[in-house]
Image (cartoon, rainbow, N blue to C red):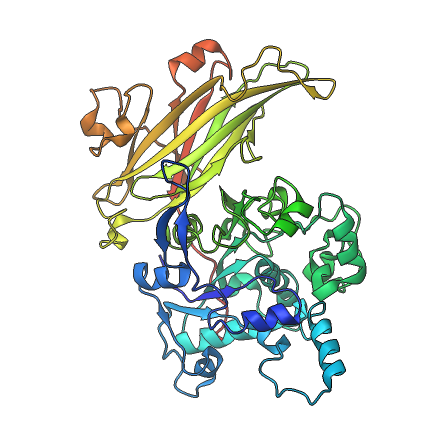
Length: 529
C-alpha cells in the first residue's frame, strides 16, 4: 500500500494552562509509549515496552520525521517542491497559537499575575475549532507540495478527530477549497467523541454548553452541527434529528474511516470517569466514539494515560493494518433465526486475536459493557485488514506468509420480566455456546488468498500448533474454504459447530460468513497545493 504522509492531530488540552503544558512536547504526545500491559498470570500489570506510534512507524514502515527548528519551517523552505520523502510523519501543532509560553511575559503586579493564572486555568483564549480546521487544510497543502504526495493519512486522537471532520465536512465545502477525498486518503481516530460528550447526569454537559469553560462547548452534541455543517454557524443549535455521527459517503467515503473505541473507564482520571459513568473509555461513551458505517475496533483501553488508546499496542496494530493492509476482511453471523420470546435478547462476546501479536485486536464483551446484540438475519461480528507478508519481510509477525486469525465467540441469552433481569433459569456468565474459529490465510503465487478454517472444538489445541491447518489436521477437517465472487469480493461460509446447530439456538442455517477483498482503489487526487 502507498506510504503517504501521516498527519497527527492531538486531542483536547483544556484551558490555557493545559495547553502550555502540552506545547512543550515536540510531538504533541504521539511519541509517548507505555511500559505496562495487563497480561500477567497473577493479574498484576507486567512490564511491556511499547515505543509509541511515532517511533513504531519509523521502524516498521520506514517513515521519516523532518524537524529543523520546526516542521513548519521545513515546509516553508523555498527548496524545490517534492524534495521530501512522502513516507513522512507530521505533527499539526494547532495549539501553539493559543499557548502563552511563546510570548514575552507581561509586566504584571502580584494581583494581576494571580488573576491571569486563574483565568488560564478555566479559559482557552486563542483556540477556535474552525480556525484549527482551516489551518489543518493549509498544513496539508504544504505537505503535498513539499513531498509530491497526492494525499495524506490523518491520524487523530479525541478532539483532533473533530478538527479533521470540521475540515472534511465544512471547510472543504467553502471558499473554493478542494474536496477532502481529493487529498485525504484515510482518517483514523482514537477515542474521538463523534457523537459528542454527555455526562451520565447531564449536569456537566449543561455547564459546557452554557458556559463553555476552556472551549468545551464543542463537545455538546446540540452544538456540533455548527462546525460540521457548511450551512450552519458555530453556536447554532442543531436541527431536529440531525446526527453528529453521520458522515455522508459523498463527502468522504466511510470505507476510508476507522474508529478505535476504548471500553475501559477504570484507568482514566477519577473525576471524568465518575461523572461519565460506565460504558465509556473514562470520558467518551462507547456508543459515541465512532462514525456510523465506518470501520471500528473495540479495545479495553482508557481515553489516555498509561493504559490509554494512543500509547497502546492495540491502537497501533489496528492503525497499521488500516493504513497499510492490502485486503479487507469481514466476519458476520448470517442466516440467524432467533427464538421469538417476550423479554428475551441474545448477545455475543467476540474477541479477535492475530498470531504473533501480544494483544487482542478487537474485543466486545458483556464484561466491558459492549456485547454484540444479535438480530434476525445477520450481524457483523468484526472487520479488519490483512497486511501482505511480502510487503513486510522483516516483520516476524507476518513474514512467514501464513497468517492466522482466531475469532473467539460466546453466546448468551438475556431474559427480563417487566424490565428486571430474570435469573430463574440462568447461570450467570455461563454461555449457551462458546468456541473459537481458527482461520489461516495465505496468498498464493498469483497473490490471491487461500484460506482454511476450523473450529477449535473440533481439534483441541489447534490454535497453539505452529503448523498450518492444512498440514496439522486430518484430511477433510480443515478443507480449503470455497470462495465465491460477490460484489467485487470473495465470500465463503463456515458452518457453526454441530452442537450449536443441533441445539437450534440460532436457527438451522446460521453460519459465519467470511468476506475477503482487495482494498478499494482511492479516488483520484486533486491538483497539488
